[in-house]
Amino acid sequence: MLVLLPPSEGKAASADGVPVALDGLSLPGLTDARGEVLETLVALCRGDEDAAAGVLGLSPGLRGEVARNAALPTAGALPAGEVYTGVLFDNLGLATLDEEARDRAGRSLLVFSGLWGAVRVGDRIPPYRCSMGVKLPGLGALGAYWRRAMADVLPEVADGLVLDLRSAAYAAAWKPAGEVVSRTATVRVLQERNGRRTVVSHFNKATKGRLVRDLLVAGAEPKTPGELLDALLGLGHRVEVAAEGTARKPWQLDVVVTEVH
Image: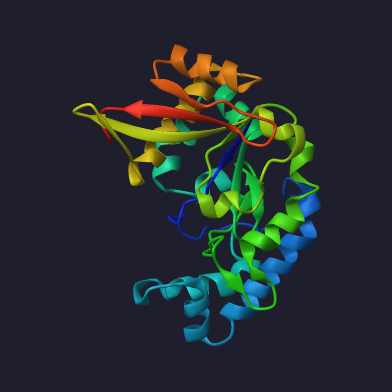
């Protein structure tokens, strides 16, 4: 099973230690593209601060992120699973998994990134600020940039069930194609109150984090969307098939919750 995750805007503080080694990251087919994005981002942030903040969409309170990006080549790196600190990753709780579950996380989780394209949770990267929606000078929209770079790389690792939990911006960087589509499942989180269902936004991240954690802890390794549905039901989640997959569209599963937290 390959689980595709969005990153989080929240990142760990800069760390001491060795800098990122691009040739040491997973998915080596992305190394050249990563180098190009990193070089472009650093050059932008070492120039005019106002211009860099505008390109990156930073509020006045986040101007410090420009300087942090400018220092990326020498900044200390951490495992990606420790760099991302948002709601999804808080509920996933990688640090509190037992050794076997952490090993499964290292093999199955792939985090998409505007800067790195996609990384595994054990890949060492420095904290950064660069969303997939950014348009970098000379490279353009990063979603389209990474879509070209990943076209030949991602299918090599998407050789089983693909559980796609990415937000729309990050889903633009790679879309399953060919026979991968029929074994891909997406998840929508719905809240049910007084007989009515609504799509939840912020808290859907928490639910998705818990879903992935439960699968990792249970050692579940479903090979098809149908087996994924059975696994989640067996773990106590209320899950329904909103749309069965076809040769052109992934499966869509709805997770129904009564409380959001």
